[in-house]
Length: 400
Ligand SMILES: Cc1cc2nc3c(=O)[nH]c(=O)nc-3n(C[C@H](O)[C@H](O)[C@H](O)COP(=O)(O)O)c2cc1C
Image 1 (cartoon, rainbow, N blue to C red):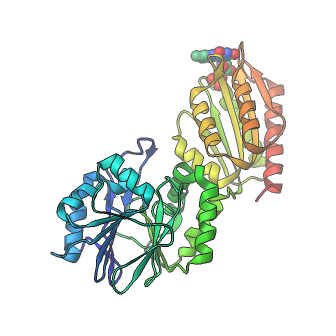
Image 2: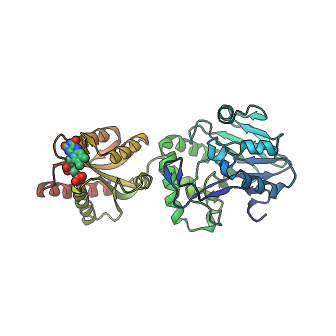
Image 3: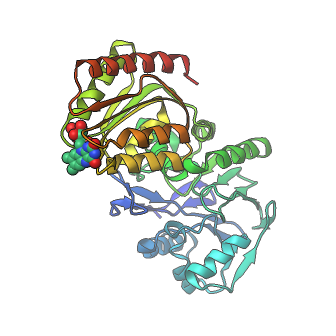
C-alpha cells in the first residue's frame, strides 16, 4: 500500500499525521503538526506496536489491512498509554476480537481505568520476551520516561527499538519518515521543544534509561511514537536526548522580560545590547506575553545563560512571568548562568519572586540584581549594562 512505509521487509510504519490539532496536550502549539507513529510487524504472528489518537482510528485500520489483508492482528503491544497512542485500542479490539493486548502491570491498570478493558490481556515484566516466529521481542520497562507505565520494545532480529515517546519530537512527517530523508535543522529545534516541554522534567530518569539502553542493546533503528524514524544515525538522537536530559547546553543567553508599559523592556534591551557588545552571538530576547512559553523553554534548554526581568503586578510578579518561573522550577532547571531584575512603583513584588526563583533553581546568580522604581534612570541602565557584561563573561566560562 502506498500510505504505509517499510522500515524493513516485515516491519511497517502505519502511523498518521495530525495537522488539525492546534495545541498538543491542550498546551503546546503545533505549528507544523505532529505524527502518531504505530508500527506493524508481520511475522508468523502479527504484532502492532502502539496505536494512534482516536480521531484517526479508520486511517490506522485501513493501513493495517493494507499490509496484512484478512489476517488477524495477534498482539497489540502498548509501550505508552497516553491517549494519543492508545486511542484506537477499542476500535482495534472490535476489528480483531482475539487480539492479545500486551503491557506491564501498570499498563493494564491504565487500560482498565481509561477504557474499561480487562480481558484479552497479557502482562509482561522487564526483560520478558514475546516470540513472533522468526523473531523475539524483548520488553524494557522504563517508568517515567514519560508516564509510570512507559516501556520500550526491542526487536532482536532487526535491532529496532520501539521507544514510546522517548526520542520523539513535534513536527508531522511530510512524505518523509527517516532521518536520512530530511534536513534535520527544523527537526532538531522541534524535537528539543518536545523534549524540554514534555519530557524535560524527567531528565534524570531519561539519562539512566539511556545509559541502560547503551550498555545492553545494539540499536540499528529507533522508532519512536512521534516524528522521525532514525535508521541512518540512531546514535545522533540518543546523544541529543542524553545531552538535554543532563541539561548540557551551548553558549548563548535567553533574555525574557514581562512588561505592560515598556519600562522593563528598556532594561532588557540594554542587557541584550551589552551581551552582544561582550561577544555573545546567540542571544534570544523575548516578551513573555507574546512568545509562547514552549519556544522560550526550548531556547532555555539550548543555552547556558538566562536573564529574567519583570514588572510588578498587584503586589506580585507579572502573571505570564510567573507561569515561566513555575515551568522552569517544575523542570528542575540547573547549571545556568542567571541574571534577574525587576521594576515596581509602590509596593514592589516582582523582584522578590525572582529572588525566590533564584534560590529554588540550581543556577549561578550573576550580579548585579537590579530593581527600578518607575522608569529606569541612567544609573539603573548602567547596572543593566553591567549585568549583560557579567553574564557574557560567566556564560563563556560556564559553557558546559
Ligand atoms: C495594572 C498594574 C498593576 C500594578 N501593580 C503594582 C503593584 O502592586 N505594586 C507596585 O509596586 N507596582 C505596581 N504597578 C506598577 C508597575 O509595576 C511599574 O510601573 C513598572 O515600572 C511597570 O513596568 P512596565 O513599564 O515594564 O510595565 C502596577 C502597574 C500596573 C499597570
